[in-house]
Image (tube, rainbow, N blue to C red; front, top):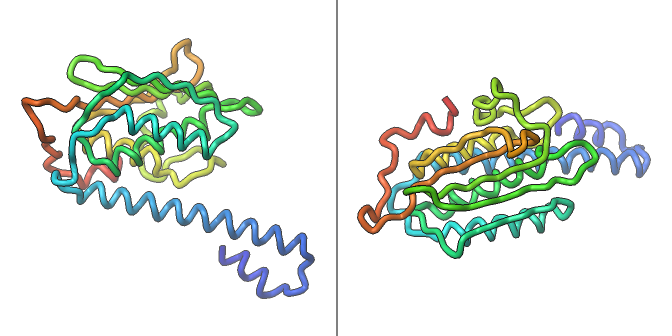
Length: 221
């Protein structure tokens, strides 16, 4: 950003087209900076949130709203979703929303081949005492040796957009909710599948025991 500002200050005689290009670069850099600060703020909140912020929630409603927002933001994406009527977990509303938003954004941005529109399949079901959410895409996938790294802070492929914190937030929230997130191959071997497993809300255990130590969650160790 400083370089672009220096160009504007040192060259007041720039043509309208040249000035517009510099301003576009500044706006893009500004948006990336805001995204980074927002992600860091959410990571910090995840490290500090207390159990009093958790409550029984309908995960179906949260997923449905997240898919709707992703469709609004990314009109080119084809999103196919299948949800049960209701599926309740004991969760932190803000944390689950940021987890879902980042899962879907990652799939839309990275989960397609050049020239092809993003096609994302979102499924939610129960398996035993867990809610199981899968997000499948039709992109290049991630080699097994690189899968653990995608959840680390500031990890992203060369030339890819984003802060490198989106999937770190996903992993943090899964761990905070006593769940897991895994990355594998989409059905048929083409594309990636992210699977999040969260414990279902239980009448026998109406609250969630948060991890005793949370400083490691946001570091991706």
